[in-house]
Image (cartoon, rainbow, N blue to C red; front, side, top):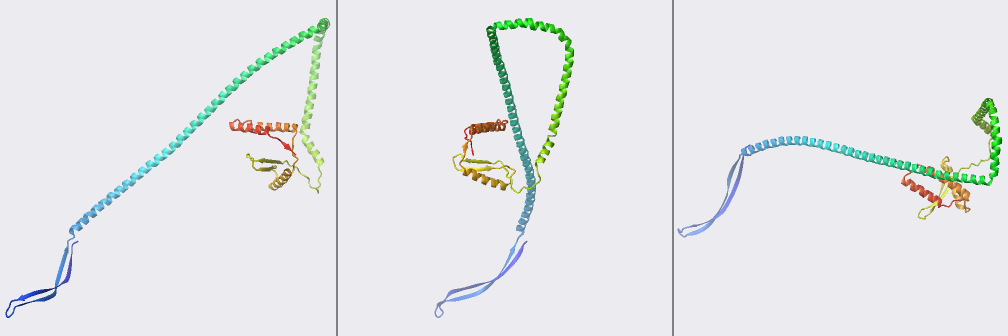
Length: 349
């Protein structure tokens, strides 16, 4: 918008002039000074029309730019949202696809391992069956050879005994033919007549024997069923309902173990008591056992009979424990356990 401004001011002035004049009577020259103020009025007319037009055009351009920026922002937000959704979907699909692929690979690996293990078990089963058949064939061949050998020995022994006592065998054959065979022939008819009566007698004896055995079985069952009540009554007859003033000692098994480090360091002692004891009792038992076993020096090597009994019991426990454990690590532990036991020296008080 155009506007006008008025300004008023005073401008001072001063100076000095020299002068000369011609001679009238006598010429001369001189100088004179002057000073004063001049009033100045200034009117300024400012035409803002072009600037206002440019400002108006700039406002229009800024409004258009704002609208375009808003449109661009909206489209950019929509594009970013769509791109975000696509990226999220791609990430989700990729993640689940990777998990699915990994699971499929693991399933295939496990399936291959199972099939390989099954095939190995089948091959081992075939090998065991073949070994069994081979052992059976070898056993039959060896047994047939030894049977033939013992048969030949029996025949040779019979021939030598027959040759040594030939007269006695001939007399026995003669007596058997003349006396035993004839007596057998004569008694054949009598046996045929008595067979029926003898069969009936045997049946009666058999029934009587079965009856007797059944009675014995019933009696044994009755004694077995009623033994608990009889034992209870017998135990009750030994018990009396009376108080004891003295303390009754109770014995419990305790294991005292002394060992040292593998590198030959310090020695350690441990005491193991049954689980049904409380912590205070276990502590007292451990202290007394450790004091007794550490202070005594009367350890001696056990006898051969005791060591053999312990060896049988230990081998039975180890075999039962590692019976179903066929892995390489378990077998190494099994062999190391047997080696440590065989190389150990057991002592007792």
